[in-house]
Length: 338
Image (tube, rainbow, N blue to C red):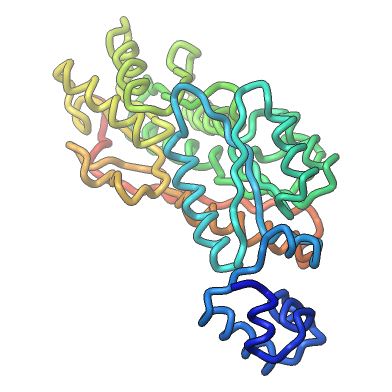
């Protein structure tokens, strides 16, 4: 079914049918409904290239993703599920452009210059990430998840309050009497990693304690890395009595490392992790139900898509910081130091 055939069925001009489907205000509502119902009934879908020519819009939002040997991380996939869910409600497509570590800038420019998308979202930027400046130069609506500004530069973004989340978690542990607390953190260059460490250090300092560099491990937030990092800490001369983990996956590895050494989580080692609300990995199903700082990543993805569409439409114009709190959920994995 093409536009000409659909217009013949409806006894309307092709221009009227096209304008009805693209939401032009000069088409009255009864005609618009009749066209939409006929298009649905006969399986008509507008050609994307023709639609771009007619409206100047791609009806799509885009993101550049880094493909490496480790594949896509679960946090991004959960976030992307939320973006797609909301984009479907907003009648937007989601375009993903892949790149290697050196091709980010070219990929962003390609998305913008080819008119494939009306706006771009960026996931988990690094500290002082040059891609933010690039997005500003492209003159295309954008929004960033993560990377709370640390300077006067303002940009539209949404973030979890990682500082407060890990400050609250570390404070709980210090109130229980823990002095040797370790942090299994994400990649050092990520802005969220810096915020988590800052929050934990602040709590330790308030309790007249310290978070030595030897007690902070950085790396990808995988089960394997959590296992190796926790094992290294637990085999040290002064092993921690408590661990803060930046993800459930890292905590899963940390739990395995502790059990292999005869250390029971909850009584011999307190364990707290950040939970992104994965539907397939629940903290309460761990060997010892896990205390978490919880902030739903899928809902954050939905909100990013909603805000990006508002920026495309012009209903959100000014840079806006939206910071979500993380809930501290207490379970059996914490207790006083043995």
